[in-house]
Amino acid sequence: MHKSVLNLVNIQNEIKLNFKRVPNIIAVSKTFSSIQILPLLDHGHINFGENKVQEALDKWVDLKSKYKNIKLHMIGKLQTNKVKNAISLFDYIHSIDNKKLAEKIANEQQKQNKSIKFFIQVNIGDEEQKSGISKKDLREFLSFCKNLKLNIVGLMCIPPISSNSDNYFNEMKILNKELNLQELSMGMSSDYLNATRNSSTYLRIGSKIFGNRV
Ligand SMILES: *Cc1c(COP(=O)(O)O)cnc(C)c1O
Image (tube, rainbow, N blue to C red; front, side, top):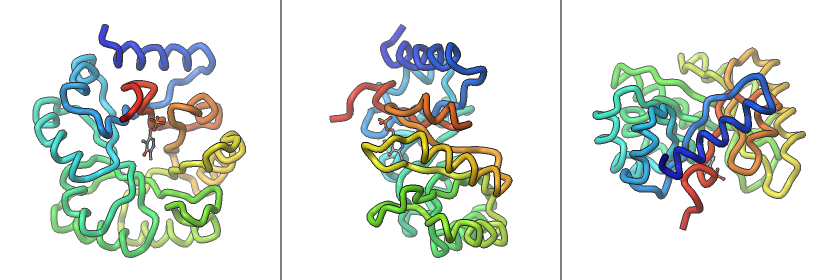
């Protein structure tokens, strides 16, 4: 078995040992080449994540035409001038966090006659430099997105680094429930067990599957 596939299976088994349920795992392939992604595709893995539109186009236009079941997730910050390509390539966008972007996306979906799925990114640690909508604006922003007919499936967060992620994940779980959303995008290589404990449904795991990025 290829190393990346072995890593994925080990993570799935570790989660199974600790919890009743295994969330979806998004294999975050940013910086890794098509050749490095192929073993996971041949293993039948479905969910992959990228954080840059151009890099994703370069790799995934081809791969998606061969592996038609793939679900591709945009997990990085999305500039409005990249929305057109993002809507044509991705199945999920995890990083909606402002009204201008939401409007641009709604507009582009209409043009392309497409409807993909979205997460609203929440700045759960109230960090000045971080992307994400603040907690106080979240409810209003969700209605705004729903009025635009965006299919918002859940909330996404990246908790503050070097913090105990447990409290933030728990807060996300409560927010998601209050807003009646089904999916929850949280948990990375260092904290996916905490995220699973707090009802995450989409883990975004990169280095623990593919190895360290250079
Ligand atoms: C890179 C990235 C990940 C994966 O990070 P790892 O620590 O390598 O698992 C998850 N989420 C986002 C938003 C990322 O940019």
